[in-house]
Length: 168
Image 1 (cartoon, rainbow, N blue to C red):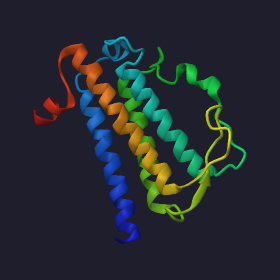
Image 2: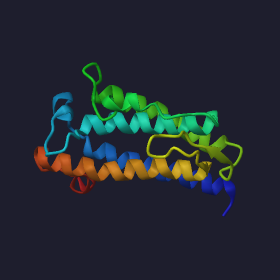
Image 3: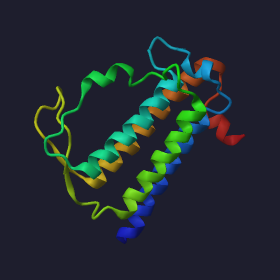
Image 4: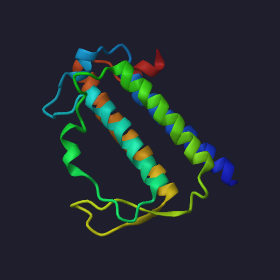
């Protein structure tokens, strides 16, 4: 497989996973997006907020390649919360911008094999180096992982889920 084809495959897979998550949000208003429907603290809006933040974070890790970066865990308190001033439409618009920047980065980064440093964290105090490819695949995994959470939350909210909604 050519490098260009691999890059386009990654862009397409990310777009597909984002589309599946977005299907789960169809017809949801801001109030519903903030509603807890399970014993978990997770909400559809909170998951959307997290995915935008997560993708933005990991693409900045690829760009900055900071060998001294530390994850700022103080920001985690609001990581899975759709803030009062945020809206589903606004977060989706921001995610479109982040997604376009991610696609451009994947297409133009020097090499998917380039090894980059990841930020240290309390649970990962030793610096880890991983390829750009692995970092992009981490973003893909985050979106896919939280799409499952979103489906459960949505089903508990009104019985809808992405599988049924994809068919309609």
